[in-house]
Image 1 (cartoon, one colour):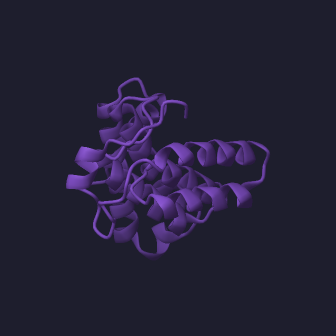
Image 2 (spheres, one colour):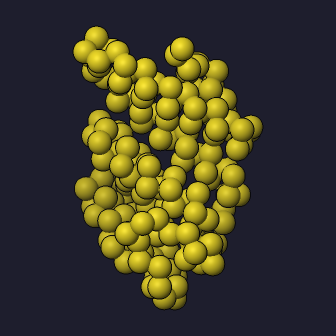
Image 3 (spheres, one colour):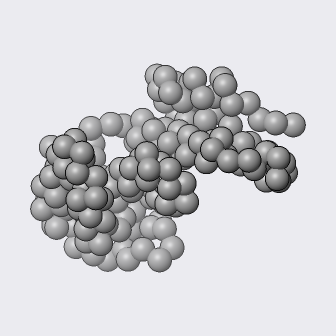
Length: 174
């Protein structure tokens, strides 16, 4: 994340509830190194250590979406659907508030990625259980939320092949 920066004006004016908005921004430069180290650890298969660093970043600056996206992905890989959903939802909320840190992607591309990830977490969480048999109404609600998220992700970034495929496959249930 060589060109990582925080968009402070919009994040401060519309920060998610419970998130401190008057933290100084100078500390973000040092967090870049921690983020790079977390990516390296993840690549080496040292997941617990990477998770610890992503959490350390969020302890220093809770308004960042990117570490939350990584935590959501890692939680989903471990089938911890509650944690994956919570982190993905918060990342989407932060990004909708203009809280993008990295400038490697456009705001639309990163939000599309996050929205698509949240949708994938939702459908994977219901695919892995018997909710369809136990509570069809709740199953349909989760499915339909995911379908809406996939359509939104595709609209935000039509070049996102995952979002396009998911939007095609996951249609709302009437």
